[in-house]
Amino acid sequence: MGQDLPPTGGYAPIQYKRNLPARGFRPAYYLVAVGAIMTYGFWKVGKGIREHNELGREKMWGRIYLIPLLQAEEDRDQIRRYWADQQREKELTGKVTSPYNTDRFVRPTFAMTPEKSQK
Image (tube, rainbow, N blue to C red; front, side):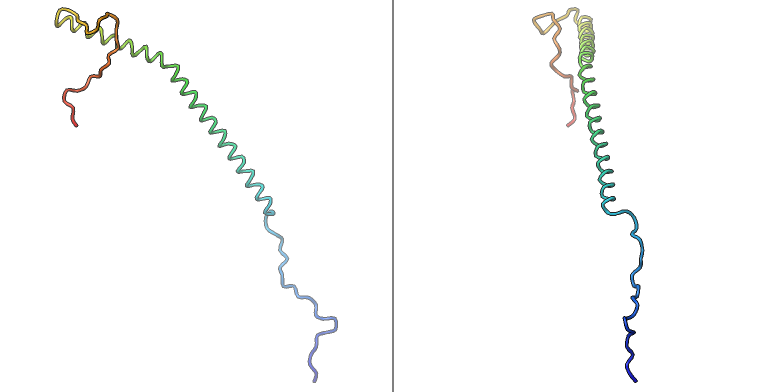
């Protein structure tokens, strides 16, 4: 008895691979989409930073424009306190004395502190 041999012309090919379509898009499309999303995000962040800087600048200029008003308010308060102090001094001593050589108002250069400070 002779050995079995393959048929002439060989056997038919065996399909061992699965013929599945590729899932999703090509990687280049994903890369382009992620790049576009990141570009949009960075653009929005840049706009937000510029807006934040502009609001800070506007706030600073608002404060700068208020300085004369606040200074005038402080000056009126200082004058009111000065006149009240002069009135108290006149009531207590009967005369008004001044440590200065002029009648012009001079802003106080000292700060009132408590007599007994705790350290």
